[in-house]
Length: 275
Ligand code: 2HA
Ligand code: ZN
Image 1 (cartoon, rainbow, N blue to C red):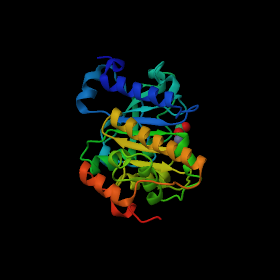
Image 2: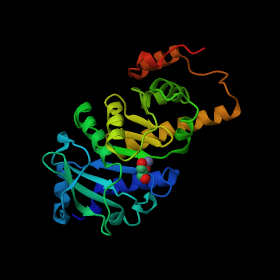
Image 3: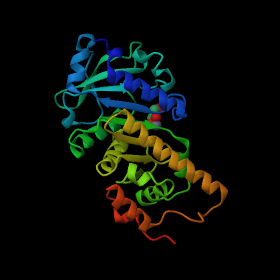
Image 4: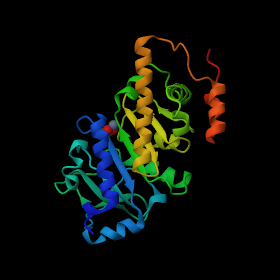
């Protein structure tokens, strides 16, 4: 089968387009990666053409030998659906999880996403934490979430609680909460380590004054997670733009009742008394 005809590639392209249409990917902002299933890679193997091994910039031994579909460094999300073979690539990792090689795509040259260390370290953490269920890591620059990193305390507790309060579905969609990374230089191993530490516990990590990372099982769930968090952030921005304080909101005991009915566990450390 042609790579571009494979269902996982079509799903990847559609998600990139959806992110672009949301306005989360100005210029070359954001990046997306998918850990390809062994049976999926077999369906496209005839079109794979491995290049040179190159260092990842970190070590991910638990991902040794795996294949990933990723966006390219400096590539624009708005072009992914128009020229996917120029904007994306399939990479293979070596037996130590130290090097990668491009096997398909990036036909006009280039490298995988500048955030490859963060993507792969997050994938590695999620392979362990979810028994391999999570396959998608998504980074975007949604404006309302970023705006909140200038006004809320940069703590997991503040972001989780504030964003849970802004829409009843939120604690059900991200019951484990949200992690926050203070401002750091993007693209390297340090921010990858900080983010992947948070991903042991959460499916969402916010990078202060930069953007968001989400992890999920498939394209629908991962896009939906980013969309839900950003929608909640948008509501909070609107509320705070009207007046500094909420007149009424969802209270800790309301969250406890919701958790019981929807069969989710909400950590008590996010249900602190405020008023
Ligand atoms: O430009 O979003 O974090 C890609 C990015 C880097
Ligand atoms: Zn970014």
